[in-house]
Image (cartoon, rainbow, N blue to C red; front, side, top):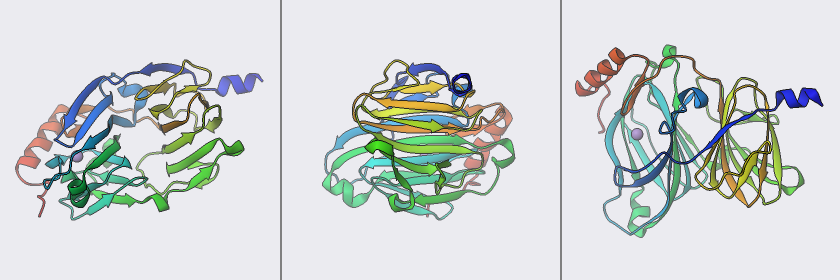
Length: 294
Ligand code: MN
């Protein structure tokens, strides 16, 4: 039917990791954005790092990223394998493992560390995780920092029709199931497992930027070319329907959200609207206004 065709999202493209680097000494990542110049197409998301999967030898000195600041956005860490410990200057701390999510709101500023969990590091193991940065609108960039530990058990897991697989709602909603994450702007974040030869049809809000990251397997969207491991499928914000076909057993991260139509000024761990605000952020950090780890 014509109406269905008009509401189907179109594909902008399929992207490979634009850079590969270590974050600290514990997170070997492939970056999908901003390295692919997709700011407008993926807003409100700012950064996607895919860490591992990589095996780490046992050590008494947990690897990771030591004390560093953030201001102006949120960091979302999704763990697939391994254990990641977080501690910040607002007094929040947590450890997350497979299926869990840390949703850290830096907003006006925090200082934190992200390390392999101590006991896990002693035994060694495979780490596989994602870090996704979610922008905050100007009106919320200087609000109070926050932290949400979202455990596997808190995340609704929906068995898909026809034994197609399983969809976990981290944020937003799917078929009336609401995700636990509190977000500042409308966001849908789904952890999706699809079996080879099966499909799922998503109806995402009209106007939401939508991209699908392939952690494992081979998938296509609305009849597109196939995307494989570590590739990102980016759709138009216009349209609603997204049909995902799995050509192998696949694990995907579906990211959608209402675009934040404001200027983006970045400098390392700070993302603001103007260069002056970035300089202020650097000064405030130097002056200790974002706090310290105790
Ligand atoms: Mn960080």
